[in-house]
Length: 92
Image (cartoon, rainbow, N blue to C red; front, side, top):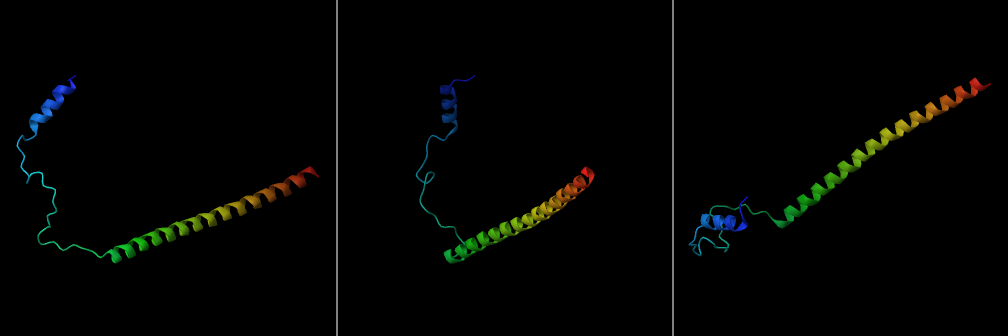
C-alpha cells in the first residue's frame, strides 16, 4: 500500500506547474451565438402547472385505489354475512 505522501506527490506531478490567469479565469464569459434565455414568468407558470398535474394525478390514483378498497370491503362484508347465516343454520 502506498503512503499518502507518495500519492500526493504523484498527483502534484501530473498537474501543470505553470498556470496563467487565463487557465484559472473565473470571470463570466458570454456564449457567442446563443440566445437560449427564458422568462422567469414562463418558468414559474410551467413549474406551477407541473405541480398541479402531479397533484391531480396523485388524487386520481388515490381515488381509484379507494374505490378498489371499498369494493373489496363490500365483498368481505357479504362473505362474513353469508358465513354467519350459514353458521346460524348449521347450529339449529
